Length: 208
Image 1 (spheres, rainbow, N blue to C red):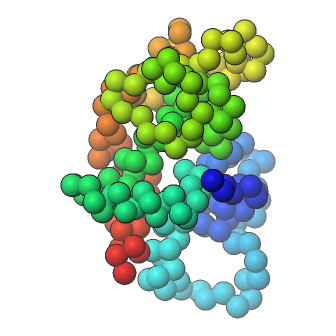
Image 2: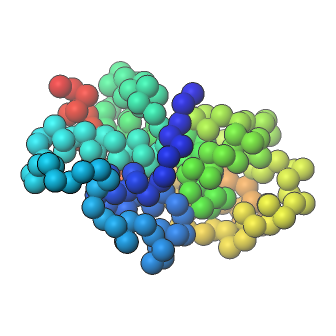
Image 3: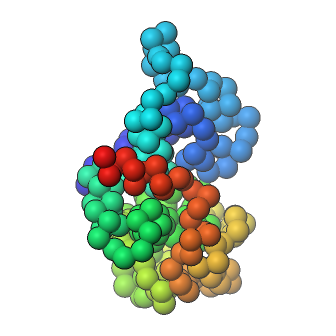
């Protein structure tokens, strides 16, 4: 499946806000968004006030950028969200949050979701003891995410777990920092999802 391979900071500039796609660098003065906040491209002909369509599109694109999902897969998630009982926007965000690469990031095993995707693809993780190298794998309550045993003696592993947890672990996950094992204790609650993106705008975009 395709993935975006261009500059991450360009996506932040295009969205008009920090998306924290590059880990710790986003919190330093070296962040490219801090140096140049204007959107990429020719600004001379840009409308000063975005249309309603542009506002909805920007929010949808922001969600794609944050989770590293391409349009085809995102549309598939949206279809599932429409067909699942409950609030459509929350269904969408809950599916995105349950991706294995996002869980690895949330547990603090990586500095960014992009890095999490890479180490998942390289086969460094097990889910319930089974090798799982699919970043879009959907975890469920009771799943245990652990490091591959053969990687634990490497300098790479030592660098990845240094300072874990690097950020607060959400309530729907638990982390055993001694064993470097994470457990999915529940599905993400609505309050865990509301601060990410405005899912209402995304639902309205696809309901047109």
